[in-house]
Image 1 (cartoon, rainbow, N blue to C red):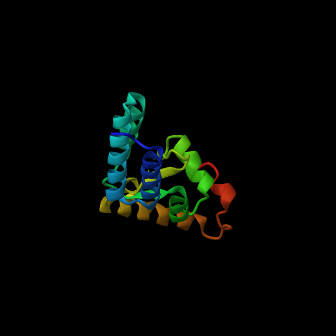
Image 2 (image 1 turned 120 degrees about the vertical axis):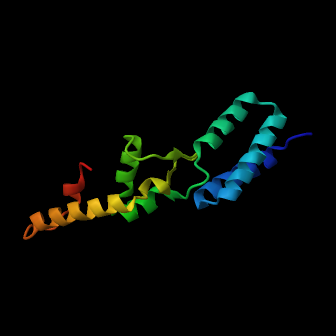
Image 3 (image 1 turned 90 degrees about the vertical axis):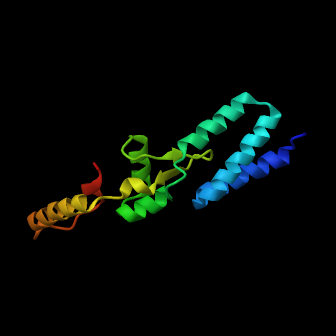
Length: 141
């Protein structure tokens, strides 16, 4: 069977789109298509790269963009990227250079939530009467 460049290009485009939109079923389908096409071309290096990429994705969890995480955490997108590059946040890097962050690393237990609330209450009590927190205060996070 002859593999056309357009088939490979279409499959890769579908993969990128489905990853950006967080559509788990389409990600799996696109990866399977790319692996099939690449295997037909008999290019073992590309097959290994795609398999590695497929294995690096947590397909059973929701994936968030750096912008979504930044908005949820109230920080800049660059801060999220810095945290990823420093190893403080788990993420995958897409072929286009963008990151996707598994949402499940932000889920907490009731015990963790209760502990966090107590800590924040103590911190806010100590900050009473002080000026509001700004970007410079959050720089080291």
